[in-house]
Amino acid sequence: MASLPSFKMLTRASLALLLPLALAACGINSVPTSEENAKAKWADVQAAYQRRADLIPNLVATARSAAQIEQSTLQGVVNARASATQVKLSTDDLSDPAKVEAFQAAQANVSGSLSRLLATVEAYPDLKSQARFADLMTQLEGTENRITVSIRDYNGAVQEYNTRIRTFPDMIGAKLIHGAKPLTPFEAKAGADVAPDVGAMFNGS
Image (cartoon, rainbow, N blue to C red; front, side):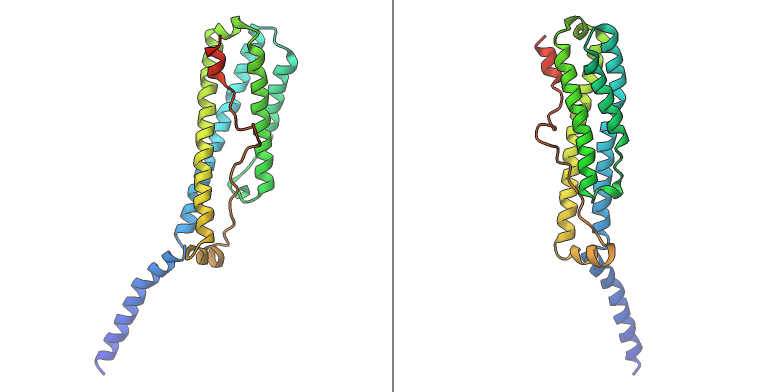
């Protein structure tokens, strides 16, 4: 009989050791960790788009003061930027395809307006040669590259998270405890993911 308490203690100790492992195997820790990683990657996407939005006013002002570019082209960039900054997408909205699509459309509109502006600039070699404008173009090119990389990283994190919550054993914790929903990848419309070709514009000058 003296061994009975020891057996109970051993059983409890074993359960104490096995329970965390069992919970971990069911996605208790891995699912929220994966979700937070995806959300962090989304923050990088937003930061890259914000950087582009911050560049646009200086870009438009420099073009307007240095050349007689069609006002409709410049205003198109300004309007696209204003509309895009009004479309907010929080991390809580990443599981809503409609909201993600609205954000994508707004940013694609900015990309299109910038492409039209850069095409128009071809007719103004004096503007392209100005140091201030050239510097802004370099910053814009770098920002577009950042956007591309951050979107790629976000989509990779979303794929990892969505796979985790749909596969055994993590799907157990995802459904029973976290109520996890799939996140929406960032898939630009056809042609909208093509960044303004700043480099080609200067190489062809």
